[in-house]
Structures are given as structure tokens and as C-alpha cells.
Length: 71
Image 1 (tube, one colour):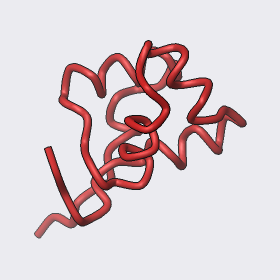
Image 2 (tube, one colour):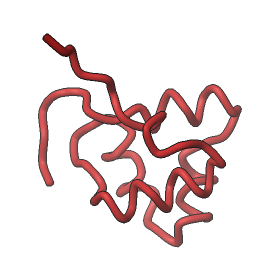
Image 3 (spheres, helix red, strand yellow):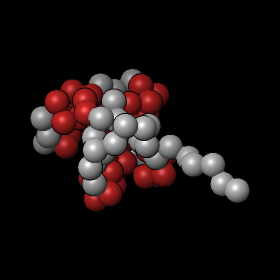
């Protein structure tokens, strides 16, 4: 899924945990370019993939998603 806005916080959570996108690529069995696109919000991972990322980082999946304003 392509997107131009910031939807995920993968890059921020990696930084908070002192982990790299290379580390995540190895954990996920994905190409580093794919992880980079997720981290820059160029492309978004599927919901299933987001859950797997959360498991790798040992965080609640909601921590990987940018909160939206509510009315």
C-alpha cells in the first residue's frame, strides 16, 4: 500500500530501542529496501506484517501506528 503521509512509527520505535532497519530486515526475513520504505512511510506494511513487526520489537502493535485526531 502506497502512502504519502506518516502513518507508522516503525522508524521511531526502532530508534527508541537502539535497533536498526538492518536488524529488523534480518528478523523479518525481508530486504532492507523494503524496511527502509516502511520506515520512511513511502509504503506501508500490511496489518499482518505490522503485527509481526510488533512481535519482533516486543511492543503493542498500536505503538507502531501514528495516532489520529479524534473529534
